[in-house]
Length: 419
Image (tube, rainbow, N blue to C red; front, side, top):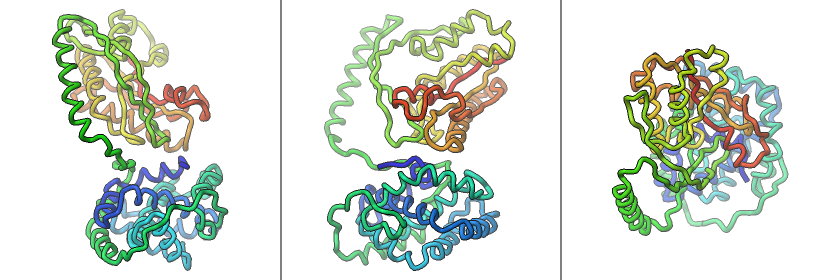
C-alpha cells in the first residue's frame, strides 16, 4: 500500500543513497526501498504520538541549529543522528532490528536508512512551514494517519504505537552480516554527503525490470530500420499517421499511466519563415493557427489571459521538474515559434490535479513552469517570457477521487500569449 505523504518525503532522498547501500552491502535496491517504506511511516507515527510539547521543543532546537546550515549535508546528518537517538530513546535498537529483519538488510544499513528518513521528514516539514508550525504538521498527519497505520508490518505495532494490518514478510536471511556492516560503515562515512539531496535531485524508484534485455537489443534496431524505410518511402508526403505510446507523468503516484493513441504529424509553416514537424492539433499547430489569424494583436489583456495552449508532448521525471529527453522536440518547436515572432510575449503556467498535499502541488507546478521558462531563456528568448507561475490544483476540474484518466487532464503545463 502506498501513501502520498511517504512518497512526498521520498522526494528528499537521492537515488544515490539507495544505490550506494545496495552496491556496498550486496543487497538489492528493492530491499533498501522496502526499508524506507517502513522507516518513514514508523517514524511519522512515532512523531504523531510524541505530543506537541516534545515536538515544539525538538523543532525549535532543529530550526536554530539548522538556521545557517543551508544544504550542508554532513552537518545536518550528524545533528539528525543525535536528535534521532533522543527521539527514539530506548526504542532505537528495536527500530533498527525490526527494519533490518523486515527488509532483509544489515543493521548498519537499517540505521543509515533511519537517519536519512528522519532527515527527510524534517526537511519535508520545514518545506511546508519554515517555522515548523505544529497545526500544519498535525493537519498533514491527521489526513494520512489511517493510511500510515496500514503500512506498518506485523510486529511493528509497539514501535509505531498502532495495530498492524499487513501480512508478515517472507522468511529472512539469517546469515551473519558483520562484513557487510563494515563495508557500509566505510561507504556511509565517505559518501553520505552525496547521498541525500533536496528537491533538486528528488527520489525516484530505482527498481527496473531486467527481463527481456537481450530481446530488446534485437528488436530495437529492427524496429528502427522499419521506421527508417517507412519514412524514406513516405518522405514526400506532408502528413503521416503514427501510432505511439504516450506516457503521462504523475505527480502524486509512483506509477505512470500509458495511453495508446493514434496521432498524425504535419508540416507547420511559422510566419512564412520556419517549417516545423509537429502533431496535428498539438500546441504548435494551435498556436500558429491562432497567430496567423492576427486576432491576438487586438485582444486586451483579460481576453488573452483566458486563452491557454496546453503542451501535449511535454513530460517530466516523476515528481520533478526534469524534462524527459523525448520532450525536447516540443520545447525546441516553441522556441522556434517565438523566434519567428520576436514581438510576441508569453506566460507559462503549471497545473496539478487535486490529489496529495497542495503545498507540494504548488511547488511542483511552479518548478515545472519555471523549467520551461529557463529553457526559453537559454535560447535567448528571456525577454519574450513575461512570467512563469504554478497554480497547483487551483484550476483542476476533476475531484481527487476521479479516475486516473480524468485526472491526467488536470496535470499539465500551458502557455498563454500576452501583449
